[in-house]
Length: 136
Image 1 (cartoon, helix red, strand yellow):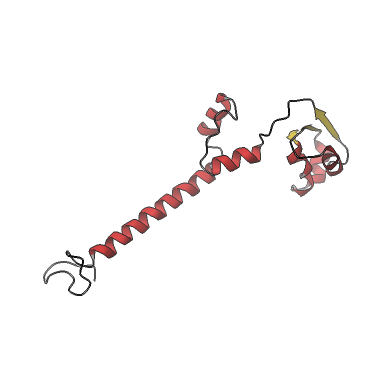
Image 2: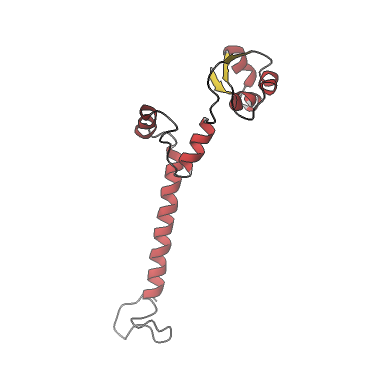
């Protein structure tokens, strides 16, 4: 299993970490701000360190950016970006954005109804002329 050091340091917080460590060999890439000792302690020393350039890009960062509606372009290869979009990865965050947009539209609609119910001239006393349909 290939992991960044940030993810590997938290392996003990995963579901059934002992089973994961028994079944998988951990290949770990260095991450800024994570010490190798912390990773080796969490994984009981069963770590193969990969010699890769030190990059500050992680899955956690990518998910957070996507959730915030920020671009992932130039952080991942174009093919990976295309796959993320076509497969709907991180779609729950996107649904949450749509939910907020729908809630905002509903609130705007309710504000319009409240405004329209005041009457054609905006008065709060008289309301609509007799014979006109109202929401009251």
